[in-house]
Image 1 (cartoon, rainbow, N blue to C red):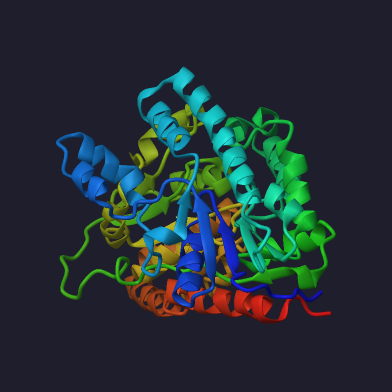
Image 2 (image 1 turned 30 degrees about the horizontal axis):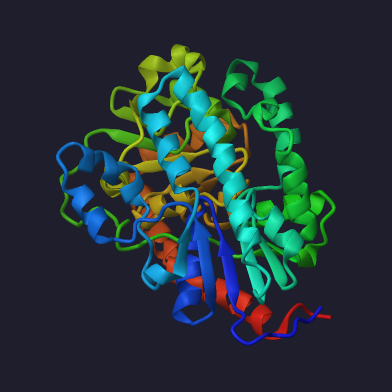
Length: 423
């Protein structure tokens, strides 16, 4: 398929929450290829935003929420078209101040924001040579676009996930409440996801695991393109030489504290491993129903959602990063931990492309408590190996920066812009 390029036609980018599309849009803008970047609110360091940041009390709240949405270098204010801003703000307020009713309202606003982005994007596709859209918000634009359509899909195919989750629900019933509940999603969501995947000419994923999931669902291999995401190596860096020697062996997990991340297997493994000089720290949000964690309350320290500015030091305070995820698009937190000089214990289901088994840490089978215990015990008993693997992890992370991602993804999109799809 080839596309005739009209004067002024460029690349339209549509996003909801994917950080990699911020990077893509910025890189395209720097190359003069960006038509427009459609997304919810973005912190563009406007005068009023700087004023809000300085307000007593409210400024801190803004910095921890919307203020975190600063765009990467390369994007000018005229490049971004914000939409669903008031719904976005209302949703944040409902989540922050509301209880049960607030969460229900936030969920409704979440779906409404998706629909609004999809609607606005569909009005701007007619002249686009290439349309790059995030899953969940691109179906209407893809249906109207005449250019090449690229779907950004940051996790495994949704039907693959559904089957996997139902299997996990039966295997770990005590943690079933922390798994995604598809019955709570609107009836239109699944057909729209199906439509996006069918209409897309190419689908961008972050790992071989995600690619394989699409192929298992019947998609042709050439349609699924793997481009790994990146980390900021300046923000995430190892502890400086000469730092105070740690007396406690600290295992760290960062992410949503849910069963999709393999959390029950980590907790059971740590229960068996723990000793007087060890600590497990879980950083992230509990699900609505936190009762599955009651039997493990004395086994870990919980740090709720923290500002991004605090994360680098949290990584540096640890000795090992444990992330036994069952389903992952790639695992940005794994890359951040590696950039911070931590050896990693993880699974092949997403992060397996990053971690080299026995070099940067260990890749263990999913749901394997024995393997997690064994690797924790090994790293606890061999501090020199922890150091070696952590150093290797830092070097490995240098191959997965946002600049690497930007170069690869713009090469790919640029070739579609210039040449269209191969015949």
